[in-house]
Length: 270
Image 1 (tube, rainbow, N blue to C red):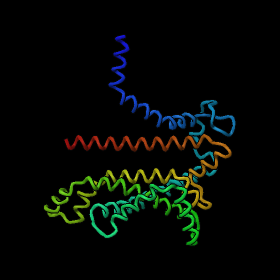
Image 2 (cartoon, rainbow, N blue to C red; image 1 turned 180 degrees about the vertical axis):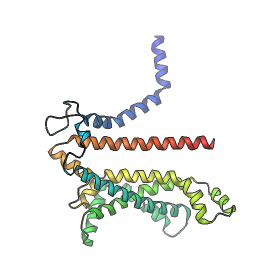
Image 3 (tube, rainbow, N blue to C red; image 1 turned 90 degrees about the horizontal axis):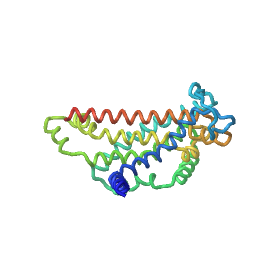
Image 4 (cartoon, rainbow, N blue to C red; image 1 turned 45 degrees about the horizontal axis):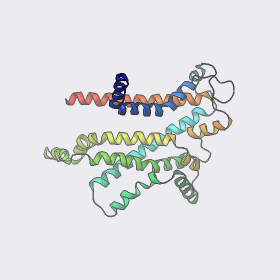
């Protein structure tokens, strides 16, 4: 009886940790399955049942026709969409926090509409806009659409960071005869950098992963998510799992690098 009571007490003390670990395991389970099945050698076209261990797909990740081509298109679109959304979103965030102007409240509310609106509605609206303008659907229409819906997420991330900034630091820099440009580059930008980086990473992930809006605005252009969807109708090559695993590992490395940089800065400040 005492052992049961002790076990219950231990469980109560560590309930939050246990719940967190279970949630993390639940979130990471699909990534683990994708990684495991990237080493599978299926007998048929579908990579849904484990057959034999094989690293052939890792040796030739571009072995499937058009896979690496679609991956290249997705990476290029995500890169340029991230640059565009981050630049515009940072400027908008600073304007909304630092300045007072007419219709500021309306702009502040409109920024969140793409986040609240269903993607299929936004995709249909963008398709209608492009068709009415006579634009040819393809790389550029996808890029414009991605910048538009990633913009809200960047503004939200950067705005939260800018609102937490202490304006006295910039005032101190100005008291030390720093000009507006020097104050921005040496004080404001470094402090806002974590929010800008978070918004940029979020924009890249959203752009690379998007299917609904891309499917409406792509025309004949095939991105990686569209390639995966098309392949699922005929079969699922192991190379798709390889690319997914590689992207996951790259994301983990970015997170670990950011944590290492943060710890190093903390030690220098201490």
